[in-house]
Length: 546
Image (spheres, one colour):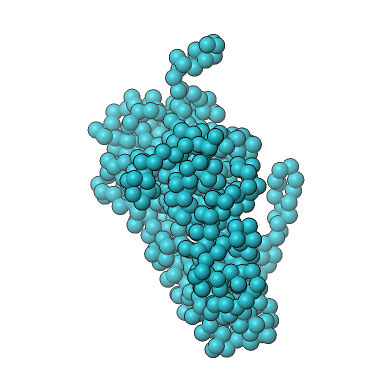
């Protein structure tokens, strides 16, 4: 055994953060749970894209050999709880290489939710270098998904991607409805009502015509704005306004949030084009954005859309990450929309994070340089800082006895008591003047015996928070909850009083609540998932392909 290996064995799994602080390697299952909760970053503050991709490949290949069932549970957890799509889809491709296909077949419909994800799976399987082509068994599973899950909406909304898929997999079913879908996809035949309605509405609009028949077809067939926007160029501004009023009543939540700016532009009374130059990969890029300064949206339309934005049930059905709301709030100019989005985040936090009102919480938000320098791709153009600050605000908004501190080179309490809007609260946290370092021991300088401390961070401290926490005088059962926002494969402690979790979804607030109430942590949540339909199937051994 070499000298380095001997030293490593003596030190156990102790390591250092990128900033030089004391840390520990996560167990392999902890790494999987973290990775499937945070997704695949295209490089980050401390690691290049190449290093991130290599780490992902190594993780997947090891999981395939050691614990494919747990990894599959983690993939489903990441998809359902954290709304991640790419990483769980990549895992399905790895899973498809096993000789025993039962786990793959069981997991496939739990992760693949729509034709776009099915198309992504196909492209990764064919071109990702993970397997040699699709193979007969994989095509069979894809075709079973098509036969069991396609509906009129999916077929007419995803005709191009489905055409690519069926050229490769050649699905067949004697079911007449499915055969009609295939005729529409492959030949363009209008073989079901929604396809015919979509064609008829587009024809009307391209002629500049809108009438009662048009609106009935739109409402009865749940036609979506994205399907019709390209055909609105011949409509008058008045007719376009009428169209948008009708359509926004039926938009699903995701489409609603994505099209708020489009509505503002329809009713714009003053706009301007803003040109920005940004530095990216060594080159300057020029970006143009149309900014709506003033709109004349009718009050009844404002009220209708604001009510739909505040609809928690509609939001939950969308499986949307809360940061789509953050992106939307940055883009819109209409005050009623901004307030409604802020109210939604507040309502979501209240809904998920209901803990005993008497509990005192200390929340630390890491505002160091690395938090701003790491863009989280699964949430759009947002940084770990954006995410940490909004969650810090949501916790404070849902639990009054919470003290929030920004921590970096220094630490500072952020007085949010008089703030009502969660976005204003988040901006106030982010703007705290505490430098750019990573010194988290300072949390213990402001610790006054709170039973629960929550730190939102990328977990790359330059010091040792663990030591100070363990030395502090604390109430029985006290916990330090480290909410990790970037997957570096490390934790600050192995002590059970320090719990680490990961994720971007507001549903993770529910996990924090469970930990506070003495329930299971993240790995345990993944472990207890049941992905099999019966005990006999669960007993089957899944072995890697030779």
